[in-house]
Image (tube, rainbow, N blue to C red):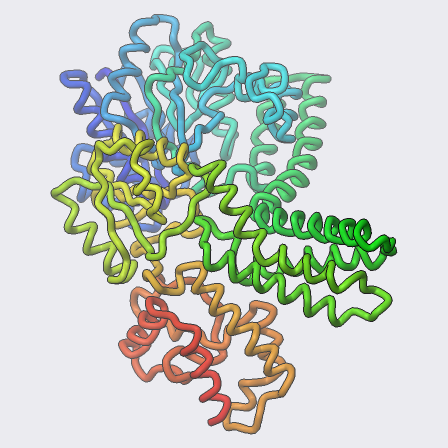
Length: 631
């Protein structure tokens, strides 16, 4: 046997299907070369074992009755393998048809190679720097954990952890490889041993890479064979929980490979790195989500300062610092409120929402300014000019963003649209699925597989592109990488299941069905409109009270405060019917959609819930709440 491929799986059936389909095609591409594919399932609860047994007769399936973890699971499968070369492959990866043939050719051309790694790209098309790494010394680990490596990503001083001296497109010898795709010579493993089972998660591949190198073998990074590694299905990279798990792995590694002062320095550097990362991760994460809002607030503050300075120069009146600061603050707060309320920070950008947010900011600024005592006012002219600038500046700034960086920023088309990259044989099945999941009013665009994405502007107009895995691993990898360069939200659909995996907006990744209609509550603007109704109705109840109707207890100020605090919503789903996981997430309702009361049957609940989810209208919400309050 020339090659043994080992996949350890745990509750990732959708990703596993992609992985196995691609791996089997890559095995066939090697022709007469003998290979085997071994799947060890770590006691999954999603039916993985029966599903693999039914759909993949070529796979050698090992079912564990307990979760052995990554190291123990791979070691157990390794004992059942017989290949001259052994590949550890994560279940959330996609390889190209020629990946195994390319790596095998490179491996056999150099008798000193002990292990080989390849370039990995995540589900949004971003290159993963852990594709190649160096020895995690105390300094390298500190630079990695603190994020200092990002200041000089190509430096082996600040970025030795990710072996920065070697470019991602260059084939070279490196120190450490990733366990997501780790191609190894059995002879080397017989000498140095397999994975150390002391590592729970992370670190075991670093330890094995170092032991292979210390055993006199070399580790290579082969840039010609890129793969997709969806990444982060269990632990988000960069999150504090990930950093803590990583810290534990590095502690075990340091105790094993370092001694004395180096081991102490390693522990100190890791603790310091975690503290720096905890702060930087919070700041970076918050800033990245609020970037457009912060830009609007900054421009509003700048305009407030400029109009006051201009008024002072023309009128010759010096304005006190406190009133000026208050006017600037009013402008910034108005911009923030309008941006969040109308969603002018959403991407793709929406002209109507941006203009509405600008108008609202201008009105709010004037209203707030008029409520100020006379001693805190600057000038009505200055306030009017600020209000006027707040109205149009957001739209002007977004036009500028689209003009300067069209691949990152773009305007949303008037109608919701999704692109389909699929084979003619599967086109009808995917069309029916998308229409039933998104709603019949959705525009569906069939995309030619051979289209040049760099020249086809229409592709970028889709809110999402669904890429059918049936087009082949090489094409899937190519399109995922293109999507990463273009800022396109592209999801991959497995051959055997109707799932949409990967993409840029992981928080909206769907399950069995894509959980939003073309005009439904899964769309962020519709959810925001519902939230506006909740807030305004709650403020109305707090102001005028619950009334004297039969439902006055439900229209209480306590419930209004719960809705404002996002603990409840005025109108919620009935749920409780088979398949209700399709519904968008929503807080528990004070009343139920439809007529306010719980439905008498699950079929009626299902009909009302789906209609509300797929055809939401805020005016109908207001009408129903008014009717219920007057009953």
